[in-house]
Image 1 (cartoon, rainbow, N blue to C red):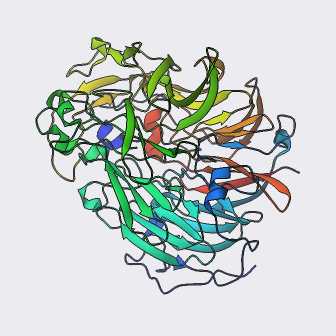
Image 2: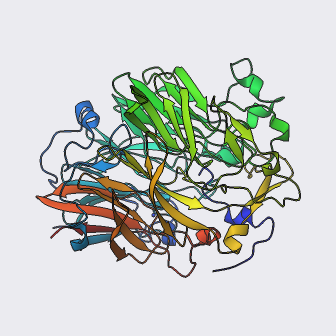
Image 3: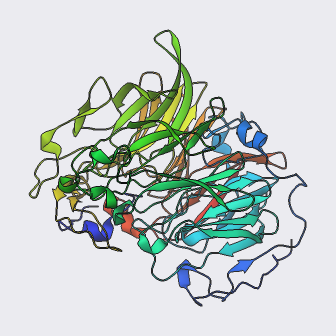
Length: 588
């Protein structure tokens, strides 16, 4: 599908830089905005609680359960599956031979449009899903029966750069936690759906939003923020799960007099960006939290922020009890391409050159697959996994920038990758530890980067330029699923799709990898060979993160469909209807 965009059409199409038994009970909560169509309730009610016995009678989720990750196939407790973000199910029955027999067990509509990016949480026989616009549902994991529901009432003056998304919830004790587009964090009782506490992270009117799933470490819920396109000062917080009290805040842009502020020319740090809009990882052995940061602001004109712009486009290791930094590594110093560093990280112990390495691995949005030593942040290697010409990587891990790839007022050089990636933090990869392969869904597309005027106006996009989608226009952008050897960065096999892949992935112990396409198909591949073994039409473009689990002794795979039509800027077809729908398949 070919179409042409004017030079500044990016303002309307800009996406993903920061980036939907008996009846449930009801509560007295009423809608403040009345009829809201696709983004809210039409009945006037916004909260339906539950007063029936549900679940299997299990106690609340404790720290040991979270640390065990996916050892129990009846549970999916963390956004990344486990603290190391493997998204690797222990279910052995999901094999290349068995998966073609998957049949639809049930489905569930969210009632909202735009991107449905959720990764469901499953515990005690109950599934929790969140949709765009912050709807939250508790469902029977085996049948799809709705137990309780909450529709967050959004203010009319939201400032959201990249779609009204929510990628999932967290669970701890008897609480389910959801962050919201108006920068709040809300805890619900997992069985009744009643609100336990509701706190403001920060004033959303300054350009902040929260779109990620919180990460639970001990008794803390850790959550980052979006808003890098509004000139905010990035940070991420830790909150007491029991009370909602904030325990610490870690800023990702230094203030005057703090270490790193010298990497920002003048007072450019005041509007520096570096958002933290993805979930991190945690190493229980060393009690270290790892969090990633996004682009400096403005995105495409760095003239007034000369310097490396710490700690944008970086991974930060810190003490989860105090929020104190241990080390950091910056992937893209002085980023002028919007190469957010927010992509998912894997924590992998591997043998390399005859010695064991405790590694942190990331397929960065800038097109390079990085291996770091997670004990001290030491650079080990970086290998291109998509077409990349903006820079090469020196022996110390610092990029050597191609001067022709810098944005200009009249660009003519095709720069790779595009501002979407490569891989992007808005979707997930997976890792099969038995095969040593990471499965990375990515975009193969290049752009012209145009430098524009820098003008900071509170509450407005602070971009400093834009891009021209020349590969999309020429119909040469496409999607890839790359199986990458985590020890070497070598691509073992690669599936190519006509349209950029922007859905998450799931790996299984039985040797299968699941993902989805923007043209509306769920896909499964032989994890070792890359052979396609299953394809099912879902109807809507897939942007969600698939999971697998067991319930009632049966094996299920859940994957959501639902995309925004404005994503035609990636080359996705605009004929597909919007609307989030969760599909749950079962092995017979």
